[in-house]
Image (cartoon, rainbow, N blue to C red):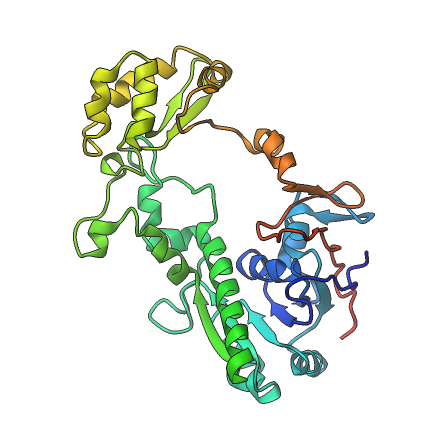
Length: 373
């Protein structure tokens, strides 16, 4: 299927003009494209920087960045120089037929280019316009440059992304990027539903910081009500509890206990002959040191594979810590159809949103500027 072929889905008939690169905007718009929307990716003449990010694989007979392919499949690409009059005129033509306009520039850039919300609404009065930035369009930090880790740092999340020594480490997930993409998706879909009733468009100011902050509700309760910040070693979900903890095995691998419910503690400690430690499993986080020490010493007696086998008949929230190669090769991934091969052999991670009774196939990866405006 060519990149310009339209695919049927829940959002067929919706046209999106997207001026976004890297992660948040492309994540949001690929989820829309996966459901059949016509997403026009407007790129600078040099292309989205993600196009150049290794590794590369064959998608549809051409080499593409795996990152770019997974976040831009099923879209159309138009290359425009928005500093030129021709480029601006072409973008105005695209806007005139669009339902949604998404931009990921730093605040103020779209106004300087002549495509802020008021200008775009003058072209298409019922447009749903979504801006995605690090800290929002207004406020003291609005113009502060930041990618994901800086946002996590300023939002407090990096303080509890710490190692045993208490020092924060580089996070393994670009959480604020992902949170912004999901928040923008939700907001745009809400606005489209509202437009069906009122006929009016909307302006959406999506910030990575704002999008991530609610994700701390279950861990930062004391800080939310004006008290002290959580400390990982004294927080049940961050390392202060024996049954929500990472343990090293005899072969230098790792496993986790990932469920704090008493039933899981009863099942495991009974099987290990240490029901005397049950009271500690119910103790406050940070006061379970003896239990954690026992479990640490116990898990160090067998290899990861031996523990996987040992836990196979026990009702305990236990998992081995897998790397991505191991995780993608797990039978569960194949059973759920989560790792999909494209024509040419390149792989896609399937969308998490799929509907019963409907087949999903990945859209083609667009070449830079291949679509006519």
